[in-house]
Image (tube, rainbow, N blue to C red):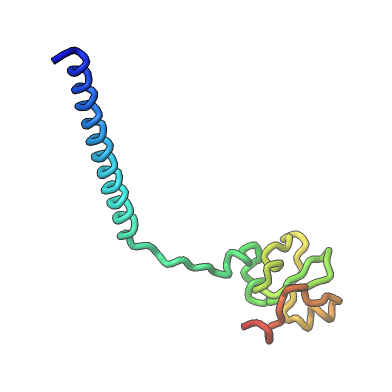
Length: 121
């Protein structure tokens, strides 16, 4: 064998080893990914639940029991608990009402994009 033929054989041998290494690495990564996914999926998790408590946590317990409608001292709209704006009212400017009628008697009107109870499904 000449030096060139010997060199070609070494290159062929190395390229076969590289191909084998790439195939083995791919298999290891695939099996490892499957195993991790299986382990994560097999863990029992608590179902996701969203409670209203986060939205009214800044109110006192007595206020939580008696108020249904909230408004801001700085605005002219009142909101029901299911309205997005209800959750972002500033605690320092809160005005609470037991009913929507009380809010309207105080001069407030129902907030935009805030359905009244009969419209709430």
